[in-house]
Amino acid sequence: SFIEKLQALKFQIAQFTSIKAASRRVRHHYDIGNDLYTRFLDPDMQYSCAFWDDGAQTLEEAQHRKMSLTTQRLKINEPGLRVVDIGCGWGGLSRFIRRETGAEVHGITLSTEQYNWAQQQRLEMGDNASSGLDYHLLDYRVFSQANAGKYDRVVSVGMFEHVGRHQFKTYFEKVSELLKTGGRAVIHTIIKPRAEFTSPWIDRYIFPGGYIPAVHEVIEAAEHASLIVDASHFHPGRNYAQTLMAWRDRFRDVADQLDPEKYDTEFKRMWEFYLAGCINAFDEAEGGGGMRVGQFVFTKPGFDYA
Image 1: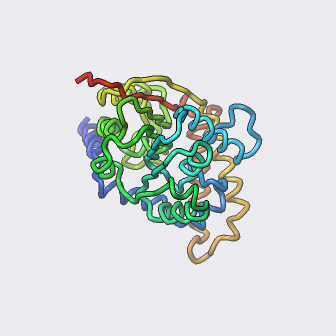
Image 2: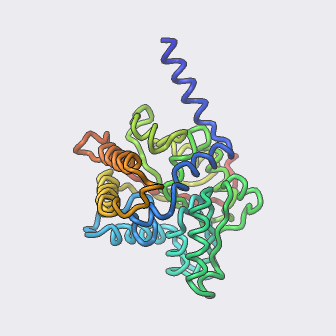
Image 3: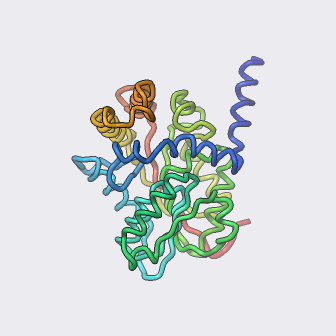
């Protein structure tokens, strides 16, 4: 019908994410206030799916497990390697990588609140750690232009879903551009069971202007950029449901402590409603549709397929 075609066109237009629009969308969600996020996230401020698969009992344990597995999959196995974290958030993973491996790590974010927090945490780590760690308030597309071929490893957790389907190829082109020959990338993203699957709640409230990919869409975009799939790791959607439940419970516990002028009753209801909706979207028992979390490992060969 005409209406369906119009809706499809609107979706296609929304997928073309300009740098200015991307920055605006990030600020809309992540610049609400660090005083909110510190109340319900773990101490490392990980705002992405934790890994409960191995029997983790607390949010802190599950997030530590996620960071540890992600770092292992990067294979930072020699001194002097340089890592860039695309969409680094508050910098928890980049600090973890720096502490655990000694690699030089740079994080990229579009959120001023996240950037300021990450820089403050970096300074508090001490000279030895902070000298090999830095953050940049830039779009990854701009950053890659000035840093082509400078990194041995690229990591990106929970950012790919935000870029929009028509930016997938551009995204991986920039990942490839940042990597040195023989470099390695770990991309962590929510995965839906098939391309035509949609979740109106997630599309509207979690990733407006973004797009959750199916596995083949990730692989095809990466191969277009001449990256080779080294491994794919999948974690059931219940991991995200459990993470969201932990956030919701923590938020409920501290809601009364939040500044009432900044976070009024309406906001608190909206935020709890948002978390509850996310839980239902990922909880398999609630019809989550088979969504899960994938970590894709890619390498950059010493030749170009093109």
